[in-house]
Image (tube, rainbow, N blue to C red; front, side, top):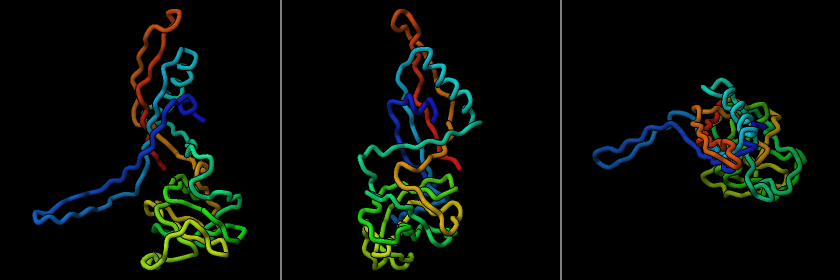
Length: 221
């Protein structure tokens, strides 16, 4: 993992989505989504002496201007995952999905599970860089039309089947029998937005103490 993220004393995560919003003269509002949702990651670093600074600077120099990306896991900070509590079995989408937000998943042991997911859980499909979030969850396999009458549930049905609705449509098709990652097992592919400002102040024994301005990263594919 990057020296930057190992040294960080604060990490923030926010989402963004390119959209157009307008309000007519009669008061009607319209929002048009132009692109999928992605994440921004902010990193705050503490002041540091030269040995640690050189390691951070090495990462910064290799990533400046978007030349290199880093892949990292961002933990959720809970003692158990928001969802998938007690789930040790692989969760798979049995059928290929080419587009949309509604994904049918199945626990590979094909038995009932409690608290298999929760709103806000991160989800990543095997072999893909994009990270999604769960905004709805249903027991059993449903279609988009079924959402009108289906009741949300964090549980599976008796065959280990459940359906999630993603925060944004798929950016690429996912293959059948694809094993998926939940919670802190997902990995974000990030690109540094711009080079930071670096300053020094006298530290202990007159040694320079380096301060690096906050770093901003953007999820990329």
